[in-house]
Amino acid sequence: DAKTTQPPSMDCAEGRAANLPCNHSTISGNEYVYWYRQIHSQGPQYIIHGLKNNETNEMASLIITEDRKSSTLILPHATLRDTAVYYCILRGQGAQKLVFGQGTRLTINP
Amino acid sequence: DAGITQSPRHKVTETGTPVTLRCHQTENHRYMYWYRQDPGHGLRLIHYSYGVKDTDKGEVSDGYSVSRSKTEDFLLTLESATSSQTSVYFCAITTTPDWAYGYTFGSGTRLTVV
Image 1 (cartoon, rainbow over the protein chains, first blue to last red):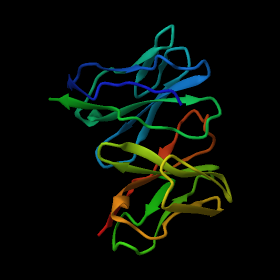
Image 2 (tube, each protein chain N blue to C red):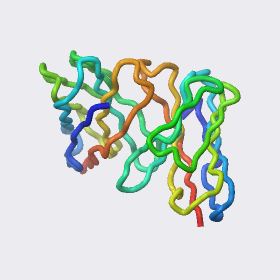
Image 3 (spheres, rainbow over the protein chains, first blue to last red):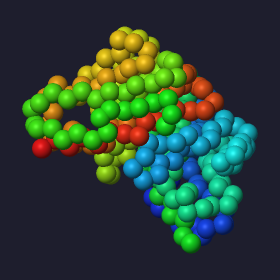
Image 4 (cartoon, chains in turn purple, brown):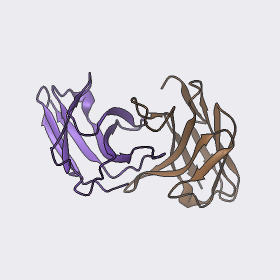
């Protein structure tokens, strides 16, 4: 799996949009971009994933650049409960495992 | 999470003793994974299973063995526990790696080897 680069930490005010960047300049054509988050002491939770197109679900939006070398996870209206470590992961189609990096520790401030 | 349970939730054991952690699922998912999480290392894959009796190694498999004799249970065994295996262990399941809803993780087992 190709490598991703994320900032180690970010802060965001409650109620604002949280934009978490991820660089994956060596991504392959068949690799999906996945986002998970881990709230303190809990198991990671799946958020969203995409290949080329932007994606949106009830939790977040995923914006992937046209060259696919970077992406941004957007939490539109961050709440205190969104404080967590967010992982950006690449997974090739058919690959049987996820490889986690260090992630971004997002702190939502009141 | 509903559908996946890990046991025990906490365990303290002595160096050199055998330890078995259990992951149980009620989702009939084919794939099951064991990860460990340590400060400064994030989540690292130990072993995974892609079917009954079908398992493979992850990036940190030394000192661990696994077994999957039925779909719902995936056991992780430390044959002779060492202090370096003190960690939080997470199990995960998915029906296929490409499944749209990703992996579901358990709540973790905190293992302390003294």
